[in-house]
Image (cartoon, rainbow, N blue to C red):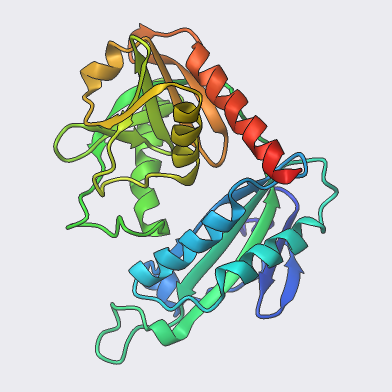
Length: 292
């Protein structure tokens, strides 16, 4: 029985000068991306008439392409313009995920393994994706680790990193949890399998210091800034699993769902805390102010 390749929600993709509806066939079996994983992407959001930090997401996808050995073929400003053009194709009732992507079509002349930067292709995919902001989540410590920059392409938001996240989530779900708390190779907490993480202890907000093993996200940076401006003591430090187990409050940040309170870490239960609520309030107030 053939697999249904239709997208699960309304989707439009810009590629090579035109907007296509659905899931256009763009990558063939000989494409470098299909064969050897040369893909990068980014993810922004449109909801309630606004798209916070869209410009920064468009800039980051170009940095990811460069770090992956590809050649960005679209200016960040043009990606942003196209994204807002694409938003108008939807009815505006459901939140939208904005996903600019690059991939290589061929390998270099000296090695098929290395992507040929001159064969870089671009697509911009927008699809409906409801927000799950503030929906509580449970975590368990994953047996799998985040890789160091020496062993994986951690300097890019690349699809090749996500199978590791996928197996973390699958393993966590098999044990009855929503997501996984991931450690780096030194045993310190890095993030969850799909988002950045914060903890609060004695009024101090803490989040793992960026060390190259995880993507220090754009939403994470925005939340850090907003909390500091609101007078919170916010620190980027090395944190252990035990630090999180002894926290007063845990929450995550990410572009897909913005702020999510953590109500359970293994056998430790937490209340939805005031800092997470404040972080979401600050973020939404800031987003509305930039959209006005």
